[in-house]
Length: 401
Image (cartoon, rainbow, N blue to C red; front, top):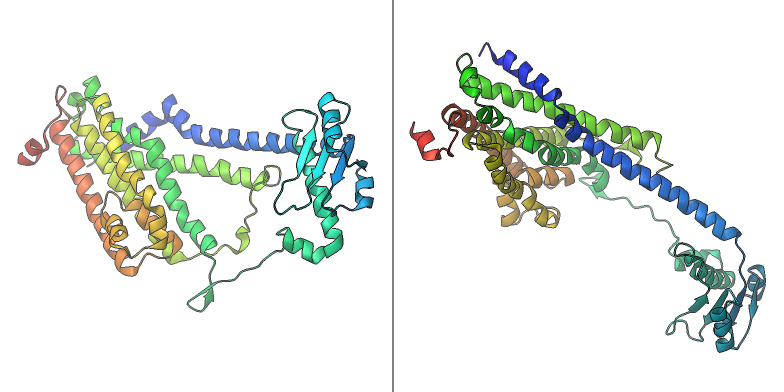
């Protein structure tokens, strides 16, 4: 194993020099940056359009059969009243009038009708906004501010929930442990193919024969796996740093949700459990993908198995609601303990706080054993299947040897 450091450095540096690695590594932050940019300029344009709309005046006639509109408020909006509905509709149609609002007698059964001159798809909404504002403000003047807030769902609520005698906020509690689940998906989705082809490219280039004359197969494959793990953590940093900076520096400009991270609950036990599950899950699928890359003669053929692996990883997403609402059901327990589907159930249940001690201990133990077995099989497959260039080596032949 004295060549392990040499293999690690070679694989690590070689991958860092590839343009494809940096394209994949920077793709996610760039996409996030583009989305944030679109949100920023869209919010800016919407705010400007709203301000311009407020300053725009248009001729308005109103028919109020409901009797709810306030006369003084109509005068403030520059609206005049009329009882001739059809005549005013004709004026709007001909362009002689900008807008006409008809308020029916029974608003609980009939709809308010708005007729207006087209001023563009983004500005036409101003007419309905004014019609609604006239009605809400008029009614608000009669029932008072407090009742208006209730009717318009403007009353704020402050909720406190408790678990085991302590205040418990499920959403905040899940943020830090849930980060491991997000990182796992990002790494597998963006870095999985690199794991898959890392062992097939030398086979296709026929340089493995020369490498194995000086380096033992086990040393070579372990060095590759360690380099993949190191590269994965580099990608984690590349992904997280721009997101944190964007949220910190441009929170208000992007109208992002206001998360008070100053009192974010930190549960060291759940964080540690999440980290262990994340590491073991990553090692398991790294070993699995490297084994597939070793057994397949070409990267193209190995790519066919990648979809199967993705089914096991992303398949449990369809049962996410069950992981939260029915954590003790046999189906959820099975997905939690079955190693190929375990990452999502275990990390999600750990994040929301319903992963029982029994399920946690069994799941972590099974994941640990499975990751060791997967890595051992990957090394064995690489040792016997790395020189197969023309066919996919049968597993029976590998274990028979």
